[in-house]
Amino acid sequence: MPGSESVDKKTEASFSDELGFIDNAHEILAEWRGKDRGVVTFPMLDNVALCNLVVAWAQATVVWMPMPEEDPCLLPEDQQWEWMWEWSSHKTYELSLLSGLTPAEVALQFARAKGLRLIFPDGSICPSAEDVVERMIRQRMHGSELKKPSGGFSA
Image (cartoon, rainbow, N blue to C red):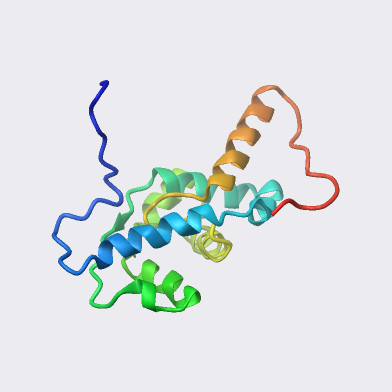
């Protein structure tokens, strides 16, 4: 409907944040999305299970409700990443159902996707991963094989 604003159910907090730390957490996620480097998606080209997990992550019910007692901006970046994931919860069986993977495969591919920063703790996926998935779908719809990039990577 024109003029109406949609609310992202995955990231909307239902409580007030007097210190502004929740806004800082959202800003950190936005900054990470902006640092997206396409090279991290390379493992997706040969790994259908990883692709399925990434797609399932974007569709699954993920609850991300940061309730910080400290400003995440004051943490080093590697600690920020782990801190953000402490506030995220999901159901492995739902990811298993959506991805077609066993719970053990979900755990393995989840760790890989998280480590590569293909998925974010708020239930979103990195923009380059979304591009790869869309490209794979288009190529398979047209009956062609997915072509791996030749030459070097672009950052």
